[in-house]
Length: 272
Ligand SMILES: NC(=O)c1ccc[n+]([C@@H]2O[C@H](COP(=O)([O-])OP(=O)(O)OC[C@H]3O[C@@H](n4cnc5c(N)ncnc54)[C@H](OP(=O)(O)O)[C@@H]3O)[C@@H](O)[C@H]2O)c1
Figure 1 (tube, helix red, strand yellow):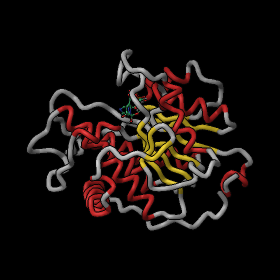
Figure 2: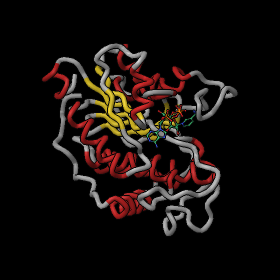
Figure 3: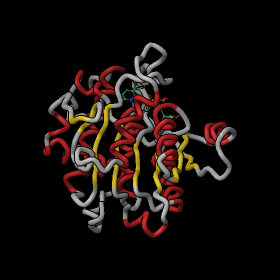
Figure 4: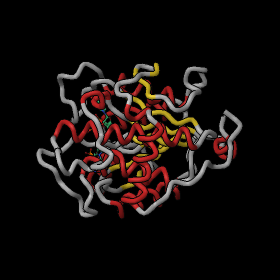
């Protein structure tokens, strides 16, 4: 059991985007393993919809990751409900049909899928384990570091993949810079959710499997950091996010976009 969990006896997790889809399955599985899980939903309507069927006392943070102000607010709500042993950055969106900027002036897909997880990582007290939910769609494109928001050549398919390259680079950066923590990225597979539809071969529970395993397992294979995983094994779909130079550039861009600097390595937590 972790230091944070020792103090409270019950380990605690935050799962973003857990009102639906893979995130809901991750949250459900963690509860089954004895975790207290704080959920997150995009807005009050989605949260209330989820809570209407949830056990009494279920805690949920609310905020849209397409807004920097709302993401700051999610970090505040979550910090008040923590500390967490595990944070799963699962919330994500497909790209809209045409390039959109949010009210913050940031390309929407990048902001929801990568800038918001950056901001939450930087603003919240660091958990012992972090899992970022990436995608194998990174194999189909490259991120242009001189044009990280795809101003010159945006297209719907590439925008999602590029946002996940940025997210993967973020996860691998955090792993390198926070060696006291276990930080990994997971491709969940092609999963039947409202994002991928009914044709996808995997159930939500199958999509959640590697995420949950990295969140809590004590198997030596799960007690690693700085890997992109698929089906409980390290994977590599695109060399770009594994390049430390790319990781540094992505995080520097996120610092600039948000005005928030990622803290240095948090206090070491020797118990694993
Ligand atoms: N399904 C797949 O085949 C697949 C494959 C590779 C990677 N992934 C990744 O897996 C993760 C979960 O996806 P899923 O398949 O479970 O999709 P999903 O059912 O659409 O769930 C996505 C979750 O993210 C939330 N979300 C979307 N936009 C948001 C925003 N602007 N602010 C805050 N929350 C937001 C959604 O909230 P709402 O319910 O309110 O929309 C929902 O809770 C995503 O990161 C996705 O990219 C999925």
